[in-house]
Image (cartoon, rainbow, N blue to C red):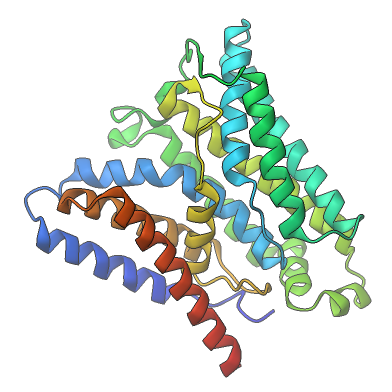
Length: 312
């Protein structure tokens, strides 16, 4: 269990430094509360996906189906709302479908012995295709019935939307679970050395199924938040979201080889991505440059992780 107590000091310092740089470049706009709130709202979907991805990566796995799961959830919610169901039922149906998908991936990995990369890559295509089929390859318009208030700029205490508070609460619960429960200890143990964990009595198969089911649930919750901003079911939405989620987790200090990572680090990584994106927008950098920067950040973070492994 190499890094279960390691603080996210490095990513946090990078976040503060990046914010200061953009605040100095565009002092008239970047330091406003409305901009900070907009960055927090943009972080929610990535943050929720990153919490689930943190659990998966700590266990030694990977999940490439996050973006497709989010899009599929928006389609399920829109379909349910248009069919006359209430907002709570629609949201729970979307989360339930995403959870079932994650559980199926976990079963194929744990019981079928398939590689997580292959299973979730296939899941990415299956979910994306299912979303397009359910939506007849077009957006589904519907009355959001209040779900749009989850990330509305003026909703919630102090102007902070309920979706942001929800993400913070989920992050806190996940961090406490990793630090103080048997589930968390077993998760780090499996990611550090699966064979040793199995010899120590850890039910590795059940743990992996639970991890991917939880990741699916959080991807579904991220889909609910995405629907809140879109107010439509869009089967083509969130393409490439899995890259942002993985980048946030890796930037936050998680090791792609497993056994290391923190929820706080992943949340800081997600916020760093939002600050960079918003800062580039204020400076006037084109989207294609932002995409290249995201890829570069992933490569740098992976290289640093590799250097740290060699030092150990």
